Picture 1 (spheres, rainbow, N blue to C red):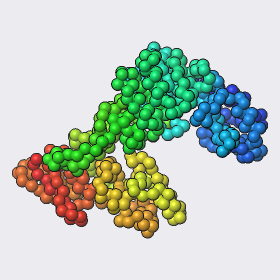
Picture 2: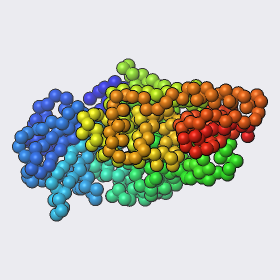
Picture 3: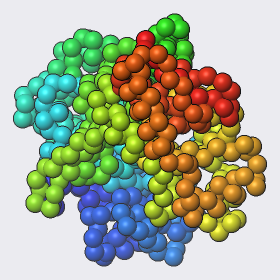
Length: 511
């Protein structure tokens, strides 16, 4: 099976042969069979075929114990993670068991080798730097790892070891699938042993590259750091969809350097225009590059992870490079432009970020200190649609409470610097939640324009630079004050906040 720049091998006939005839035949009769993702068999229920665009009931007949036993008999052995496979293929079979340990459900996931799928990031893989792949389940992370192994082993002639938990990358059985080329594969008996096999691979087999799928524990993060410190290139996937998720994940944040809380002295905090307690990166990142896989043909690339994490922790928007394949199969690249930590374009970007905007379509809401189920239930009761976003950068608006906002959370500061509207509830009560949902659904403005306040601050900056002394600005809410502090920082002026709400204001002076 071929597509633009790719060749796909799926061994689909082998998987179909492992299914009972009455389940296999409707699948074989269907057009577009190569879009099949999974076949789901649950005891006492009708069988389903899950395709990229729909879920299809294959027959009105219910699955029996005999049907499940038919499939199990044609598989390799189930491991401790209830996963099995078919030897020399990439298909993954997952079982659901009852209390007695009997299989009462089976998910047959189609495994595919897609040759040519890493062309969009091939330069990063061949650079010798360690690369971490992120993305939602099913987006193709494991498929990409498989192709990475082949390209590095056969094309770049490097010594590649795959640490293969559940035989996800190189297939079931003792002989690896040919899709990994001449890369070698070390199988992992159970997921809990993955970290020890990672270290064993380095100590016993002298690899130049180690490939790992689905890193998810602190032990695996520590093992990865040990491997990177020995000069071995790492290519891996991890749980999470974006770099933001990883930084906020206490278990895996060490992969990108980790986060620690640092207390600054009064003078240093004043010079930076920050609170005395701030988050900072605590170590060099294990991975030099992070790639967010958005689809088969589109990725976002963070090439200097150390700098990106530092920028994020300072509260500035991060700017990945977006890459995609156009209709002709050519790689296109574009770099998002945001204000950087050095303040070089701070004034123009701050003005853009401060403008109110209306969410288009269904508004995406990032929740901080408010329960997801409560918001969705209230919206459903009101007959209005909202979407809860788990990613700060992709949200249209942030919803939080007064108590959480007052804590000066890093999340709140990051949202303000990104120009995200922040809607603050005085109390986490039903009437206030309803009021918010009405407002955001109508696309009402959720905060004031900061233009006049920044013009005032700009004039004060110019007077201090020319005449010295101190300039005290008009009282503003926290979001506007934050922008004024950043403007002062751009011109290397000191700034402090004085007074109490609602009369709290910023004063500017020379350091």
